[in-house]
Length: 257
Image (cartoon, rainbow, N blue to C red; front, side, top):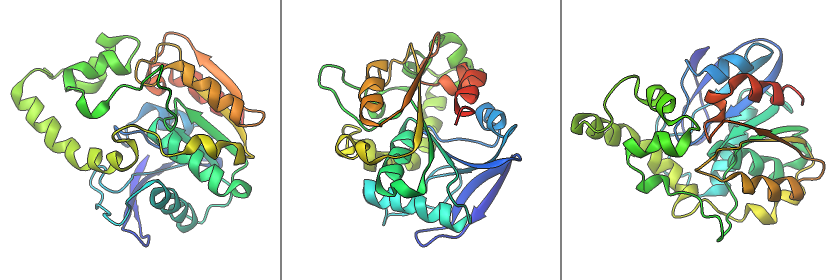
C-alpha cells in the first residue's frame, strides 16, 4: 500500500492505494486509517484499493469549507471522480459507512455495490450511541473491541494509555481529525440519513460485530429494512473494530459484492 496525493477543489487529498483487481474505494472511520492497516491489505488481495483520507486526517490539509454532511458527501464524490473511477465498489466503516451510504443515496445510479461496516448515521433514543468526543483514551479498547486487552495492544502498541505524556500526545494528534469528524458526528451522529436510505439502489451488504459497544448491533436492522435487498452479515466475537478483530470474515463479506 502506498500513500499518494490527489488535487481536488476543496484541498489536496491524501489517499492510500494498492492491490490489483476491481476498483474499490474504502472510507475510514473517525480513527482514520494508515498504510499498514491489515483490512486494507486484505481488501487489496482481490481489489485495487483506494482509501482517501478526510481532510485533517494524517498529514492531509484541513478544509474548513467542508461544513456539513452534504459538503463531505459531495467532496468524496469529487475524490472518486478525480481518481477517474466509474462505479467502484464502495466500502465504508463507521463514520465512513455513514458517508458511503449518503453517497449512494445522493447519486443512486452511480453506485451498484455497497458495503456498510457498522455504519453511523442513524439514532435511536432507546439505544444511544456512545459519545466518542467524551471518551478518554484508556476507555477506547473496551468501547471498540470485543477483546479489550487485545484491542489496547493494537491501539497503543504497548504504550501506557494512562501516562500523562501519552494523553497529551493523543489529544494533540486527534484534535484535527476529531474536529473534522465532529462536523457530522457531534453532538450525535445523525444528519437525516434515515429519510434517504430508501434511495439506495446498490447491491448492499451490511456487516456488524455482535459485540459492538459503540454502535449497538440493533442499528443493523433499520439499515437492512430501508435498503431494498440488503444482506446482513453478523460476526460473532467482534466489536466495533470488526475490521481488525475479524479481518478475513469482513473481507469475505465484501467479496460477495
